[in-house]
Image: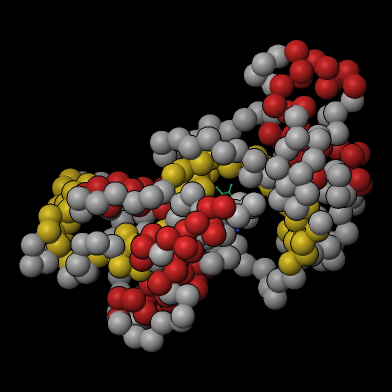
Length: 290
Ligand SMILES: Cc1cc2nc3c(=O)[nH]c(=O)nc-3n(C[C@H](O)[C@H](O)[C@H](O)COP(=O)(O)OP(=O)(O)OC[C@H]3O[C@@H](n4cnc5c(N)ncnc54)[C@H](O)[C@@H]3O)c2cc1C
């Protein structure tokens, strides 16, 4: 089964961040680049900040924990724990000089499980080694491919979030040098034109990785924490760029105590009190990791 997603426009995560920051500044807000290393709870919160030239503290009436892979660390500073895990995932992007992918193709996700398209020789050598045997066994679906940079561009992006092993967050997670060929083979099932890159991906290819911070059920955490006047906007898994505006708006509605959509509670920590919902989510066949 294939899922096609049509997008209204093209904006990168970085551009989106810059746009939001511009908006915050135009309303009197400011950005302070510092690492929160401790939080004291009292009438207000007192945050200890590590900055380039030393340590400072800042008083805050409200804390919004949006620390990405480090949401768990900020929660710990508040004496709480969050039901999250961090899992490394990777993507590649390269200029499709061979025109394997139609520039008008929407963001396409191959939802079916698959066996990777190795030659008989490759398959048997991968099977021999216990470290690589898994690559010859059925792989999860949700491999995705999309043209990047509009109709005039040449770049394409491929991703496959098959890793399920949680790890501690680090600033620069290691990527697997075999990933580019693995994702290429996997994506070729839906887009056979990509086979022309087997064993010869362009040298200028970008291979990058980072953490998907997620809950077991792969739903985000947006809303109040247990500590009064502390909120979380995190566990955005592989959909945090797409969902950034909606996540921010929902969190702001919690903070300002304004009207919230009916699903707001289900996206907050409150869902763990709803045993029926949690059972449905955890018993579901697929948590939709993308
Ligand atoms: C390889 C890869 C590809 C992806 N592709 C897509 C995609 O195509 N579309 C999509 O929608 N999503 C994608 N995602 C997911 C998306 O990147 C995340 O969901 C999103 O970045 C999460 O946003 P966030 O604000 O929660 O965390 P982050 O973007 O990680 O931001 C957290 C911020 O908190 C700061 N911080 C952390 N700890 C502290 C501290 N102690 N003190 C002060 N600041 C702190 C960090 O410096 C950072 O600025 C991808 C992820 C990966 C890894």
